[in-house]
Length: 99
Image (cartoon, rainbow, N blue to C red; front, top):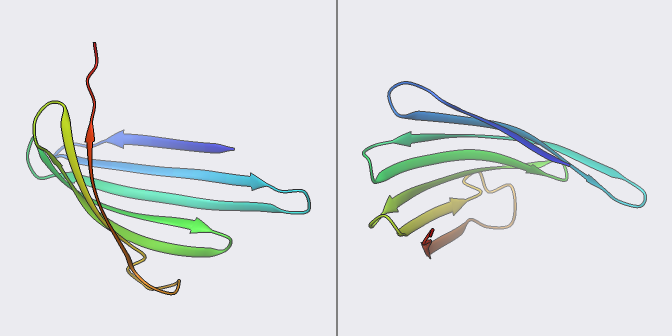
């Protein structure tokens, strides 16, 4: 089960909060998640979120840049608090064209 609620606020702030539950054969793994996105401009936003997995919570941060209407670049840093073995970095570009 996965549920997320998102709300836009004045001033370019977007907040999200959610709940996730994984059902295994012998166990239930519930967790909470939440995040904030601040729109710096029409094409740049700064992101921060937390995500839980098996009673271990991670703090993540990132930036999203719209290069044009169809191409989006994302850069993330996962697990800033180093609750796991190490911090991970991610860089990606996506293309979306809607007809």
